[in-house]
Length: 226
Image 1 (cartoon, rainbow, N blue to C red):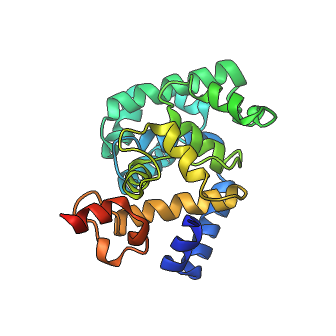
Image 2 (image 1 turned 90 degrees about the horizontal axis):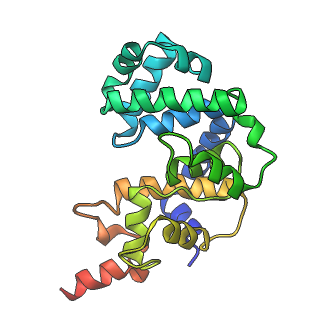
Image 3 (image 1 turned 30 degrees about the vertical axis):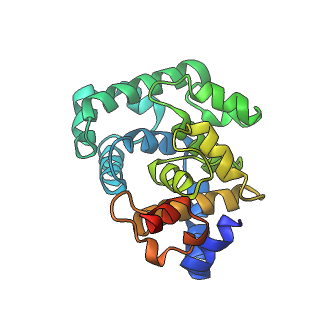
């Protein structure tokens, strides 16, 4: 099954092109800003993430040195819309200090390392897990690695690409196996899957009747039998 092509046909080529432009914009982003945004996004939605990120940008600025020096109370206040603001403020300060200590705050120093080495380093940083590391690998370092969020995990399990008990790594590899291509295709598929999970393959009341994948979907087949 060509998951990429099925979703392009569902959303349309215009939508695919729009996502391509999103990728181009992300490629211009500062690596630390991507990292900060991903940490902020944990346990909240994209709207709240954008608000909190903008507040930090306007009030403080986003560099490792600025975040490391920022008063914790100010950082917490900026992060308040994203929830867990005290936890996230501590994570960001520890993260900034560690990057200054290891890399003088410059993540581009990791560019010459192999993807698995970069991933291993990133996951030792405060507040960074599989998804956060993979987002940076895909969108900044341009490696064809699929970050897995709750939408992508749900879709993979419902389709039967992995078992219901599958962990992050199994899901990531299964999705990557559905396409061959550079980081652009992986990035576009990542964004399409998230949007598909929001619109169609929802956690509650999925819209199976309009789903272009229902003929190959284990979840749909089980629903039809019941």
